[in-house]
Structures are given as C-alpha cells and as structure tokens.
Amino acid sequence: MINTAYITHSFCGLHNMGDYHPESPHRLAAINDRLIASGLINYLIPHEAIEATIEQLERVHSKEHVQSIIAASPTQGLHHIDDDTVMSPHSLQAALCGAGAGVMAVDLVMKQFANSVFCAVRPPGHHAEHQRAMGFCFFNNIAVAAAHALEHYQLERVAIVDFDVHHGNGTEDIFRHDSRVLYCSTFQHPFYPYSGSDTKNEHILNYPLPAGSDGHYMQSIMSQNALPKIDEFAPQLILISAGFDAHKLDPLAHLRWVEADYVWLTQQLQELSFKHSDGRIVSMLEGGYDPDALGRSVNEHIRALLEG
Ligand SMILES: [Zn+2]
Image (cartoon, rainbow, N blue to C red; front, top):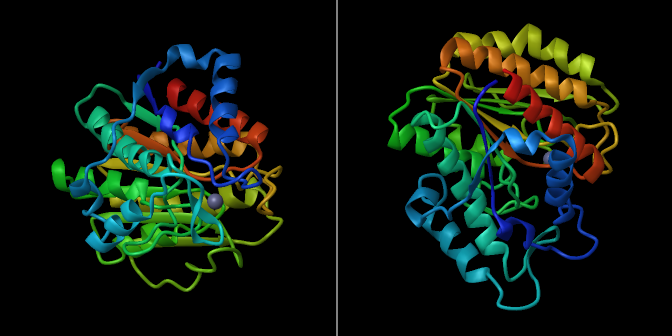
C-alpha cells in the first residue's frame, strides 16, 4: 500500500458564500463522511494545513492581487468579488490554508514523508489568475504548489493535470510563459470560463470535450494524446487539479463521467509518476457540486492513490 497523506483544515469548512451557493461547506463534510464510512480515512496520514505565506502567494500572483484579497476580507457579512465569488469572515483564512496545503503537500512528497497527498480544501483555485479572483477562486492553490516545487526544490519539469469540468484559465494564465510546467486540462466546451479551446502553446495541452460526452471519450483522448505527451515530458512531480464536476450527477455541468473514470485517470497518472517521479503525486480538490457524487468520487480517487 502506498503512503498517502490527507491535508485539510477546519477553516476550509467555514468559508461560506451564502446558503444557496453550490461551492458550499457541505462538500468537505460529504468527503469526510464518505472516507469515514469506507474506512479509508484510517489508512491516510492526516495533516492540518498551514496558511501560505505572502511570499509563496507572490510567486504566482501580483502583489496587488494578494493585497486586494486581504483587504477585501469582511469582519462580518459577505463581500462580493464578482457575482459568484464571495468572501465571508473566514474566507481569507480558508483561502490561505488552501494555498498553504499545496505547499505542505509538495514538502511532504519531496521530503519523502508521503508518496502521494490529497488536499481536501476549499475555496478551489484553478480559475484564479495572476491578477484576478474569479469562479469561486481567490488564490490559485495548484499554481502555488507548482511554484513551490520549482523555486524551493529547483525542479525543472512539473506536470499539472486538471480534470475539473471547467478549463483552468487561472493556471494557464500563470504558467503560459513557463515551459517548466506542462499544463494538461480536459474541460467541457463551450462552457464557463469559455477559455482554452484556441490556446496555441506547446506546454499547454487543452482538450475541449462536448456536452454529453462520457468517460470513454475522455479515456480515448487521454490515451491517444495527453498521456503520451506527459510521458514524453517526463515530469519530476505530478500535480492534479482534482475537480469532480464532470460527474454525470453534477448539477453545474453536462459531462457523464462516473467514479470508475476517476479511478482510471488516477491509475494512469500514478503509472507515469512511478516511471518519472518516484511516485510523487499531489492532488488538490477543485470543483464537484453534487455532495454525494463528490464524496464517492474522491473516495475512489484516494483508494486508487492508496492502492498504487
Ligand atoms: Zn469546475
């Protein structure tokens, strides 16, 4: 069995964008409940996230962006960054823990305290650009993790695989000029945030998927195209933007993936990690808005990580 760590923080469950917002605290509760019910929680090494530092955030965000999010944090009530990206009194701490979890996860795998790590954090991060919060995201958690691997551990090749149903416009924005990062994203198209389908960049691999397509379609695209390119890149570390909103039950999107598709994808990435990166994988939660489907999918994703 592989040594898998699990990072979360109670602040991540206190970030609340309003009673009817789909990116709700129930998501983390559903994951936790499922891991307890399945017993998998007993096999994971638990860690409490620590907040990212300003220096770690400024590796991927402008000083102005970081300061504007800190300044926008309300002491009471809600503060709208845009129509669907909202700060409550605990949101800043949650966002700092989300980004800090990525840093901690990279430290754990690079120092060989764990082979793989799952970060059960919210707010998610992959829509946050260098200079802009959007799409439920304030700081780009996976980008902060990748930048830590590049700067602190001097890695030369880091792959970020983003299987969230939405294109990770923020991650693409941050690394578009940094060929040390191979960014690979599958996403429903045309769909929010309406980016990625026309990107021309050798180290950004975007795979738009039509509404209604299922996991078999994704598997054929990954097998024929994405996985061989990741293999060729030979990443020293694989990071996953693990959104589970391509699931057929997700209320926000229109793909038809099931738990077995997440297992397949996890196994493929794990195989590549054994070949190129000593099995090092860091997976961070992004989307997934049907709490039940999310809990089951994360459980199977983690089971696949554990089983190696
Ligand atoms: Zn998403």
